[in-house]
Image (tube, rainbow, N blue to C red; front, top):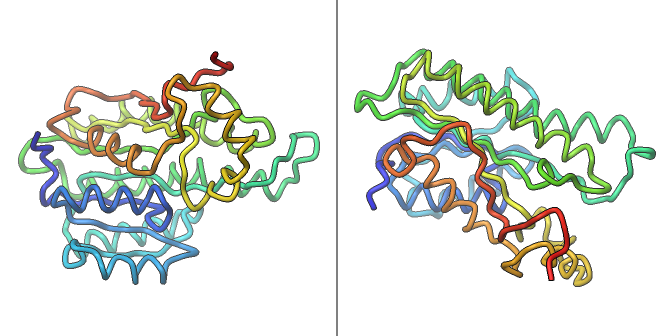
Length: 265
């Protein structure tokens, strides 16, 4: 199926991570023009992007996603290079690996987790909507797309990571509010969430080296396997497509092997 993403400008945050690079490869293979955001691993992202087949239609930008002014500046750079942004993937996030119950949770960790995962998504969405308002809808009439990377922690909670679950749960309210606001700017624009479960990436790899943890995790899934970054990227492609998902907005699509909040036999 032709997804209608050729030459569309796709801005994605957190492009230096495992899911971010899978997103970049997937959208790049569809012929999209890419704006890849990084922060702590910016130099590595620049080197990686320069080696990809889409290098000539790619811009790498840096910003602390929790700093709204820096996010606005990154979108300004995208507009200066490509003239518009058609798809925004608010993918950047942090997952503190240490298990800490709320009774022992320190303020600095909690604030940083929420500032990056929730407020970072909010500032990214705001900058995207401002760019869309400045340029107007795509001349084709196909609507823009805003996609948040959520987590099954928002649906089921996650012991020892309540700060992360809190931040990701906030994306439900944000996405379902913005789906009603964005149409005032672009009548065909859509807002959705792709919601991974346990997915093997650089961020989780060390944790998932624990075979007991993996065994516990897959006991909650009928498909007894961990997710891969490519699984998330393919779902994001579908949700971002103005052809394949033209009538889907305000939804959270879970990519977690059928995970439930209970142990399955």
